[in-house]
Image (cartoon, rainbow, N blue to C red; front, top):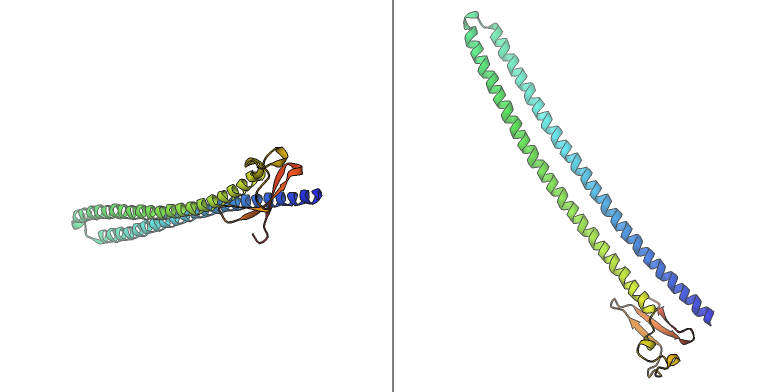
Length: 212
């Protein structure tokens, strides 16, 4: 009989250890999922920022090419002009250069402003996604911790004999129990356990009910 009790006790301990190990796996999986998701968000943010920068550089290159073509046309017109109008052409060319430089400067400032605004928007969206992922992962971790705590509470009860605590341990001079056994213990999450008092071994055993 004692061997059966010992075997059942060992099975219960094994099940308890397996459940704790499963919860630890859940915790590690949740943390790994969180880290993977954050890494993906960072990679997406870098790719989108690089794409915006490349687009900005292409726009500047196109404008520069257009300005070069404009200068070529001005130089060609100036070459074909007569010597008498050379001074006038030089003045016009100087104005054209100045106008082109001003347009390039304005275009660069406008593109830089748009690029900064776009990068700021992408960064804000990425941070929001990261916070959302952190919150979701935190909730999973909290749930896993609560489950681990619940199992630990059952383990703590396992080492305390209720009959002894209430003064009904006959083996140690206590009163004879006035209730009928078996007794049952119910946790706050609804799980119930059958109590078994192995007085010859001076211990209280908890047995999980089938179907839980």
